[in-house]
Image (tube, rainbow, N blue to C red; front, side, top):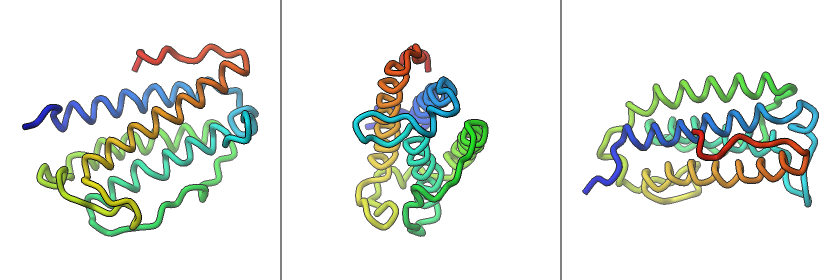
Length: 154
């Protein structure tokens, strides 16, 4: 039984990506790379984690070739560079999505050679992880006196 179509899942994910992009863009340049609370990572570091998971994870799911997670290996010096990469990956996700055979969604896969689950559960993790980190970004923005985007405007 299919509860959510492949197209609906992608649209939901891209809605979340659109909102996360707006959160990234809401940060003043300096604070995006330097501000944190309680020893948590900066929002630029959190965004890098999301970038390190989404497109590389999809490529791995399609190719069946495990690659180590490349988190922390990107060097973004400006908000514009980070947003440009986010936008490139958003387009790449749309392109790659249709390359996932429908039968693969319920197959087990060991993502990044470490995390074994079904493909659909791994993809849901990508979305859940993004929502979790975006919540941290909301806390940061509020601590900086900045009104974050409304979470329901995806």
